[in-house]
Each structure stands twice: as C-alpha cells, then as structure tokens.
Image (cartoon, rainbow, N blue to C red; front, side, top):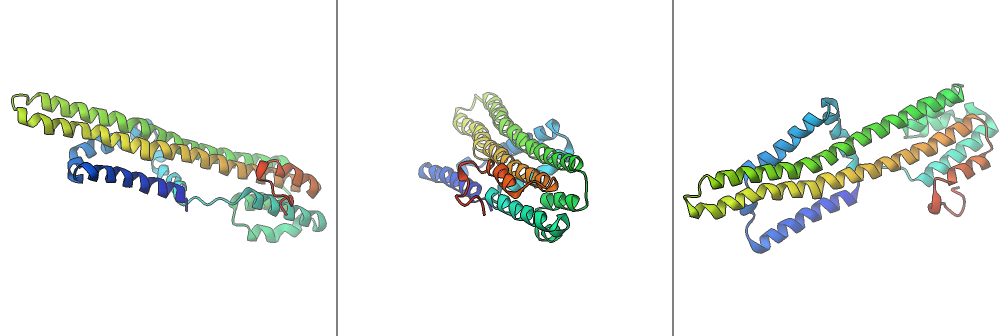
Amino acid sequence: MDLATIIGIVSGVGFIIGTILLGSGLGLFVDIPSIVIVCGGTVAGVFVAFPLKDVIGLIKVTMKLFLFKLEKPDGIVANLIEISNKARKGGLLSIEADIANTSDPYLASALQMTVDGVKTADIAAVMQKKMDLVKESNGTGASMYGTLGSLAPAFGMIGTLIGLVQMLANLDDPASIGPSMAVAMITTFYGAILANLFFNPMSNKLKIRCGEEISNMNIIYEGVLSIREGEHPKLLEEKLNVYLGPNKPKDGGK
C-alpha cells in the first residue's frame, strides 16, 4: 500500500475542511449543481478525449496509486545472480524451480522461454514488447489524469460563468447578489481542489511508478538475456549493479 498517496489525500482534505470550519460551516461550501457541473463535465470531457477502453482501464491503473507494491531492485539483482550461478553450474534446466517460485510473471515468462531453448533474439523481442505495453498503459493513465487536471478547473470556470449569468439576470433583487456570487464561485473552488489535490498529483505519481516499474523490468531483461547467453555471473553482477546506482549494496547485492 502506498502510504504517501493516502497521507497526502487525507491531510489535504483535512487542511481544507479545517480551514473552512475556522471561518464558517461546511454547508456553505456544498452545492449540488456545482458538483454536477464540475464532476460531470470533467468526466464527460475525458470520454471525449480518450477511447472507451482507456477510460475503463483507468480504474486498473489507478490501483497503482494506492496498492502499488514493487520489489526492490537490489532484491531482483541478487535473485538473478543466484539464478545465473545455478544455471552455470547445472545448466538451464536446473532453474526450472525458480520459475515456480517467482511471483513476477514477467520474470517467470522470460525464464520459461530460456529453459525452453527459445532463441535469445526472440526472448528479447517478447520481453521488449511487454515493456512497451506497460509503458503505454501507464503513460495513458498519466495522460488521462493530466487531462482531468486541466478539465476540472475549466469546468469550474464554466460553472462560475453560469452562476454569474444567472446572478446578472436577477440584479433587480440586490439581496440575492451576495449569495448568488458565493454559489457561482464554488464551482471554481471545486475544480481547483480536484485538479491540484487529486488529478495532477496522481498523474505525476503514475509517471514515477511507471519509471520504477520499467527500471525493474530492464534489470530482468538484462539479467535473463545474460543467463540465456551463458555469461559469467560476475559479469552479470557488474552489468546489473549499474541499475542500483548509489543504492548499490556494499556486498554487491549478495
């Protein structure tokens, strides 16, 4: 579970509600027509901007913001080095047990192709295609949230304009101007909150998650191809430690 996302959303909402309560009641900031304009218009805009399958797929991508669990790179490197040592000593068939033990379907598939004797070029092509699909999926999700982040304030402004038009149509009643102006501004308020507390930060978080996921996949990509080619485990270790950067363990990942 990604605590940072949850902490950010809960604390952000808490700060906003707390600030409102210091000056007035929450009821003043609740307006159903404004909610309908901002939320409904924003969702409608996304349906216009993206294919239906991508909009539906956003639910799955969104789960990465809250339930994202990624294995640490140093753990992947250590596992691949261990598999490489085993393959070098006992042959490729000796790593079949590692296929059943791994929880990563990307690694399991690559190792299975290796054990089955698939050519290195073909393994590389399949693994690269899977990485491209992950990039595309996460990239689309981040793009959709970015679009939501731009649409929400826009529809907030549209709601404000609607409220102002309705207010100007009733200028003969001065007593209604103040309340009408307050309601007109609430839609802008809603749009700003949705964009800056939810949609834009979520878009950025998905980009970060995509980078982390692809980095791990690259480690597996390099490791499996090295194992398939029968390279020395020490060479594999040197190649994979590059991905660890300053976080490289002093014991070389063992």
